[in-house]
Image: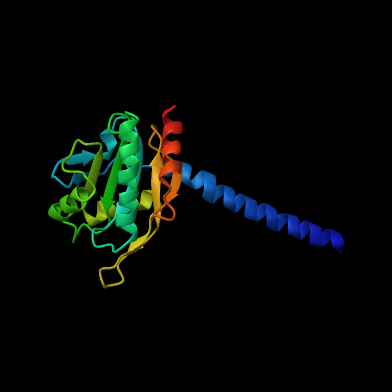
Length: 196
């Protein structure tokens, strides 16, 4: 009888281990920006995912009416950008991508205002703020298994992750959003490691 308990416990442990391996290693390695999507920057320029030069990219999904998590994460990214500028890699080797998950409400003007609040005044500064159709936004979010929905009050419920992509465009690290989970030093080190 003891052998059966040992066997059952071993199978449970193996099952849990396989699940952890799938969600922690395999699934993130398959996440990438879809090549067949074109979005628009906050300043109206076309941005084609299929035509991107190899760079390390940090991708976040936001909506401009978010009361806390989104702007806190974007503020952490602004601090990270400043460190990467000092290291001489921001823009040339590292790019940030911020995508609204509320394109119906987040007009170009609202995205510009949001970007301006974090020191981004135009395209070409190494950080793009993007909006697309509802279908393209969902396609990009789905590629990262990023879930979101509006319960009807405009306060969108969403996954709380940002994504670090290697030069090959695949996710190398998932990063928690918000000031308590997005640690600038850790993300900086992960970016520098990807660049080495």
